[in-house]
Image (cartoon, rainbow, N blue to C red; front, side, top):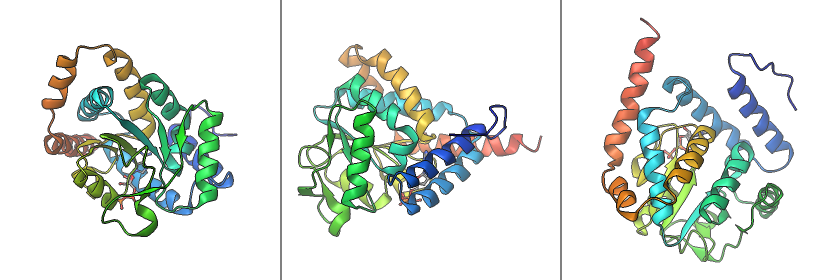
Length: 249
Ligand code: ATP
């Protein structure tokens, strides 16, 4: 795949770009996805390409929600499938949570390709039906599976659009977003926002979920109740400020 040397200072970032370009070639990623990724990269640079303390806390609480949920679902778009398909399948397997393909720029062909990609990576169940509507969302963007996102009490939506995130929250769902921009509408409307790069976040969540899966419910509920998203977002913004200040010391 790649001729990028392992010791290149921007190795991880360059590999992510290669995965997305491959995703375009395989018909998994949309052109718009490349632009969205660029915005994420810019914020990752500002945050120092590391998991902050605030992000780790949000990742832990997100796992507690997913474990306590009655009907959780993991929503997968093109970028998420291309960058972190394997991690998403592993999380889905570990916590027995189905995956649902959910695209902002929907085409049936792209949805089917993403589902096949996830199945090849070992997914057991990938929902692609679009037989229910998120209320107050126009046309294609609102269509979801009645057995998945529509019925879910907890939704993990890596890289969600702000408008749709807001509508899912209005439906009474716990929405867990992964978004490197702490100021995006998604970040500010989600129940839990993980301000971390998608692959780092999911890698951490796999470890945290393994630790917490057998934890007593009181511990999980205490984690959930002790979390405040706005406070956590402020901490992420402060972490960005500290990182920038350090560059000029
Ligand atoms: P919103 O609608 O929420 O205000 P937006 O218009 O910026 O935000 P989109 O363009 O739909 O959102 O999605 C891009 C978002 O995804 C950006 O906020 C970007 O920071 C984030 N993002 C992109 N790639 C990654 C990644 N690999 N990991 C985490 N976040 C990412």
